[in-house]
Image (tube, rainbow, N blue to C red):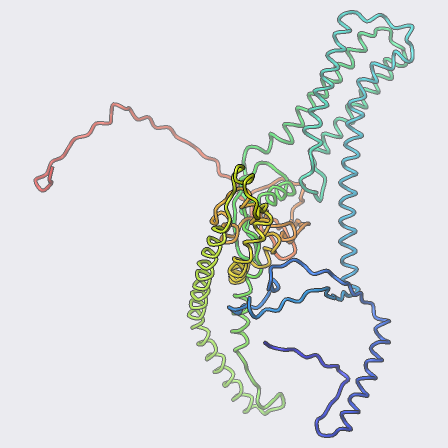
Length: 529
């Protein structure tokens, strides 16, 4: 195992004399005293972080490519708290992220508050039209007949239907926070506000000022307002829900790191709403992003670049002849390095073949270990539970009992396939208890580890991004067009989205008479018929 040693920049030691060694110790002591005094004035913060929950022997996601086969025996697990120093810039960045999240929450709650206020104004306005005449001039009102009382029932049921419809359409939990306003929704809210204000203006001028005595006409006026609000709600359904159902565009979504691609057909949506739909489908359609799978190609490219070394023997001050000789030598070395790089495909081939062999080997060991572990447990019937007096375990205890027999093989397989950062020991035991509870087979248990699943299959801490950034040359409130390109960027990668319009399809009809299906058997001397 390689060891690392850290030495102070001010220390000096020598093995020739004992006095120089003492002088080095004194210099180190002086340096320590200076460092203690200077550490008080530095703008840095040390945070004691609790240990995470990785699988035993887990390394970082961006670990080394070459891994030890016997890592389970050679790895030392160190427990306890670790210290991570953060600079002042990191603290400023973290505080900025917190401020941005607080701002997004305030914006979301403000939108909800404004929607609730507008909804209350809309629902209470017809009731106010009916109540105000009884409060202001009750003695001058005419009696309400049977037709007028029937209108009361109509207003009550229409208001109930409108309340349920508004709740179902506008008060759903938000799926995402958009960078700009929703144009159609803002337009509808403005239309409703102007509509209600115009009704109030007419009510104040023609009914309140003149103190109209015809109460049946006032009730019909309130009924007309409720009918108009129902029609506006129907318009909202058409603009917000039905307009986008028919697909007009085909969007190609490509992940920038590994090139994973999916295609989606969308209707007439704005760029920001199309981005929300793409992200919703991304978490269920795309395999989880694994940065560890990209380290092999990067390390291979760095190794080839490191193998190319050019030296200038004479230095910058050499004469012209020496410079010409050095230039010819460097060209020869570059040509030789290029010929060596031409054979790099063989190295890639053998590396991939060796990796596939190791994966198959680890997979076979894992399958055998899990099948043997599952044979040690069996579900007990209710009659057997009453008679049994020995060790009876619940699913969680059973999972903890059989997990050690498969842990080593599972660790090595996850390490070989570079999935160790996706599964913690606690999540594996929970999944094992879930499979035992539902009487699932070993193959069903292993499916989550043998094949890479979608992003939603893993925990929220593995999604790598809570906030996405929409990058577009066009306005995000504008609609999709043919050739529109925009990016959805997160921490480690981005999604490149290109838009193509679905072509117009022209179908032609050709009629074939069923009676025209007649056939003739052609006999030849060479055939066996």
